[in-house]
Amino acid sequence: MTLLNLIETTPGQYSLLLEAGTTPADDLIRELDHEPNGYFWEGVAEVLVSTEAQTLEGRFAYDSEAGMFCADGSDRSALEELAARMNVVVTDGERLRRLVSEAKASGFEFDD
Image (cartoon, rainbow, N blue to C red; front, top):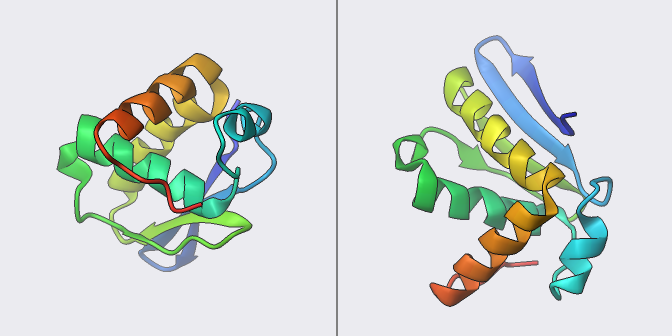
């Protein structure tokens, strides 16, 4: 099951999208004192890139809003890798709980 969609917006340009508020993790996110919005998911992506996938750093840009997570760029493979990593967090509550806990312990603040 994947809730993330990778689309080609113009030739050679891609967007990775997640509609906020539609994931199985929404209740858990609220339980962790966060809002399941696009900015929260952007924070998840930032944590994943900085802690597990440093090779993705700088290969796309974020353009999230309250209702949607969005990462844009021309590097389709980087966005595909981000989608795979985020999909695990979106669908696995324990993985999400660990990520938020570790991020908080390291001083990361989610902008949700």
